[in-house]
Length: 130
Image 1 (cartoon, rainbow, N blue to C red):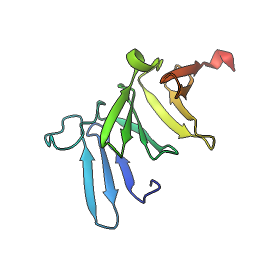
Image 2: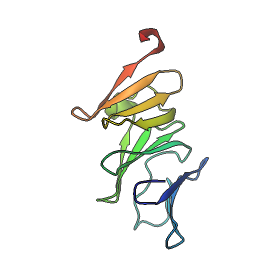
Image 3: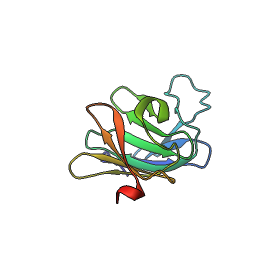
Image 4: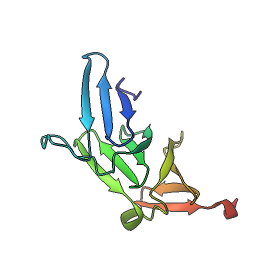
């Protein structure tokens, strides 16, 4: 549940849905979105984690295609992956927004990552680093 009361539901291959408990409506974001009036989820649809940051953005971790960040103001997604953000592994098992506004991502086998908002890159911390 996010700060506006919407409930976000991730699926195992069919993207993510946002449920509005007041209206009873669902809005679905799918990588195979047939409705071009909505933003297309830039992930493979296998959702493993969902977290809201202090700015109201929704961070979505996937099993195999990195992270998507949904900006509610623009209604669009931004993809974060190995190529564009230094994410060391595109299997993201957990995302956490800390009290100081930092975004942390836990990956499968490549450790913990901290997102640097100034550079739009991840800083990796492996098991060997403690």
